Length: 170
Ligand SMILES: CC(C)(COP(=O)(O)OP(=O)(O)OC[C@H]1O[C@@H](n2cnc3c(N)ncnc32)[C@H](O)[C@@H]1OP(=O)(O)O)[C@@H](O)C(=O)NCCC(=O)NCCS
Image (cartoon, rainbow, N blue to C red; front, side, top):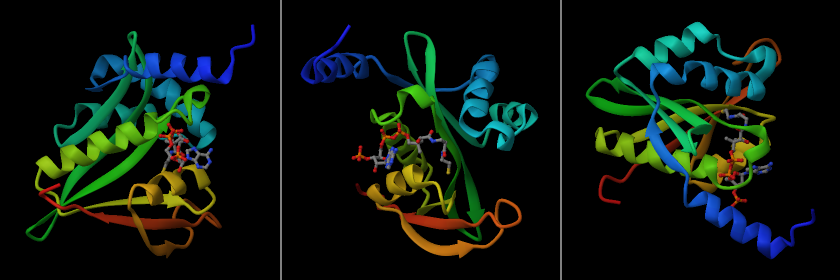
């Protein structure tokens, strides 16, 4: 069946209204790991690491959910740098078939709010130099690319480090 673009847009707006951002829990491990493998294949973090992150109290682990299905997730942690608090984003993953619909941006907005509430002054993350969708997402959300890290993900696989200053008032 062909759906006209205007109909598709209103259909998505309807679905979007039902997307909720919630704290992920250990019972989500299998579904989260399935999404991780769809996103990163052989370069996925191990299930053991996800189990650890879900258990760790200092990790902020958020999932986007609709009708009890996890659409994507974001993982970060508050780290201390002297007296300063810094938010680090470890990963953000959206199901391949649901990309380009604002879920990544929504997850980023919510984790940024969590970091602000925790008193973080800035957020730091790393991204592979050839990961254009993620680079665009971060750039559009105000991240500055401050450094290139050679071989960060292994031989010949460079990364950018990006930073966003947080204003506590906004
Ligand atoms: C990066 C990722 C999380 C983005 O999620 P998403 O839900 O598709 O992103 P959104 O729909 O919210 O898009 C937000 C912005 O990202 C950028 N973007 C998203 N997909 C893009 C694409 N295919 N090409 C270029 N830019 C893209 C755009 O700037 C977009 O803003 P716009 O809609 O105003 O143009 C998703 O592509 C993903 O899961 N990738 C695989 C995992 C990964 O690489 N994670 C990052 C690890 S550092």
